[in-house]
Length: 461
Ligand code: C2O
Ligand code: CU
Image (cartoon, rainbow, N blue to C red):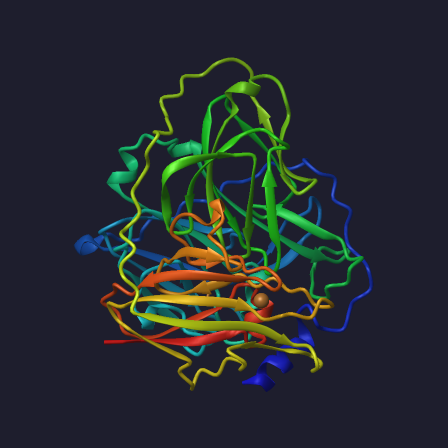
């Protein structure tokens, strides 16, 4: 398996030979941020919503005037959004029209192993597969993306990512902004060459383009009222530090759904794979502005706020949704993440070994509650790697960080959590699932997982 990872890196990855500095200069705020189209089911027979998606190449326009050859779901660079309803199963038939194998993982989804997008469970070019999504979990912002063995970084970088939202009546009753005022926003970056093509090089002088819903630094016209934004970090390797330049926003949800209560804040970070939901009330800027969403000091979206007053029946109630009870842990284990930088290209390890699909690294019993001590073992100050840790199948809770209590931003249901250099996270998870079989846990810097920073997690009866 290590050889596969190394071979892959000859073509792509942060450790590949560096390309020369290049890239288009983006004039910010010249294109409007699109909202990814919502996919309609092709049938709804027997209470099951059946969807169809072709995975195919398409030229997309990230920077105005440049064509970027991409891999897409149904031709859309942020794939079509599936809006599923809790308690109502969905199937998605994916057909591979690429010349490379692919598969699909529903990130954050509670699904059976044969629909989880196991790295070795691949659709050859021309093949099709129907994935089954039971939608038995609470309302949440999930996403789907490629998970092909050792190629996931390359494929997601080229565009295989889309939103999958689960909605339920309990959430609808709260009266949060909905319809046109409930906007999924996929944030990511990429390096492009002067022609617009994706570059895999990691050269520090390469121009990095930051996109929202597939457009480089777009503007987005808004009414002077409240909006719900479902923010997803789909970058291969980046931590977004999001703010409105000091103005307040209200955090309402995390990876696994709503928080117990809204949290006002002025800055929120998300690492690769994570989601955060915020409500922004633009009424205070009616006819004034513009207002920017920043990543650190870099403005990435300009909100153009219309003047005047509009009726806004939406609200953010003082209590949102209680979290499920924590359970009593009976098992505790340690999981480590590290890079072996003595090799060129390096390999990436969990529990000291690169991923091998034929080896079960962790076996958990269905129904048990476990504590995982997730440790970033990269102690060399020359290589201070972040490693966002992601567990398939379940949502967990962060109960400690860096030897102390969790940070306020660790609250809520999570499937992906930032683990900083020399850092650690304690998480608690209850495997209350009908499913048994092979799942995964891995670093969600997908260049690291493609290099082996992934472990096989078997759920036993
Ligand atoms: Cu979003 Cu196994 O990944
Ligand atoms: Cu990592």
